[in-house]
Image 1 (cartoon, protein in one colour):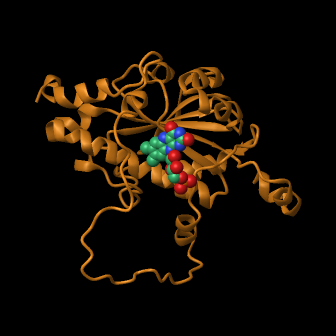
Image 2 (cartoon, rainbow, N blue to C red):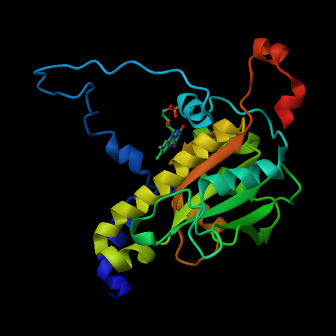
Length: 260
Ligand SMILES: Cc1cc2nc3c(=O)[nH]c(=O)nc-3n(C[C@H](O)[C@H](O)[C@H](O)COP(=O)(O)O)c2cc1C
């Protein structure tokens, strides 16, 4: 198949991009908001509301998963934490890591990528890095602090978060890589693939005592300038840091735990 064959996927992606002068959410406001709960014909109801307690770390990470409310200001984060976050969130299959794969990927295409924007990370310079999920390393893309570019690329309500975050992740997808196997239907899979990684980022962050929030409110044309022009399209942004604690919580906090 040629690239042109995935015209629907490409058109859909292009037409749902946010630009400074055209924000998709504003168009969507005219649609009626879906009503909850869902209308279902209830013939018989079986209560399924019991939950066994568990000390299992996955159970805890799932039960406590949430998007941060407010980020503390630029708390330095250990590189070991980032290394754990990246490996648990996105490892792909190669000869060396044959047995470790933390995400499924439609057709084994692994069309998703992670770009790390480091700001306040102990052990590495502020820069843009590409996370290689097969070789397990960070490849330097661009030296320097891109916080200003990130801020400008986010919709207004999230700019303060960009100011405060310790690092950010851009989740991207090479649409051709999946569509060359599935045609336009591959666009569904591209977004799902990124979704698995995003959930892993949430769960692993929780486990590592980090705070994160997925942000779909960004200007595609601005954020995409941060990464190489190599066919990777920005699907989702994640900001990371430490959640700002209330005064009461701060008084009870073990300060060593906070920074580690
Ligand atoms: C695909 C996706 C896009 C999101 N985009 C935004 C966003 O632009 N701004 C924001 O504040 N939260 C965003 N969120 C976070 C949701 O608002 C949040 O998950 C939801 O309100 C439920 O809250 P919780 O994650 O704390 O349970 C996004 C989440 C997902 C999965």
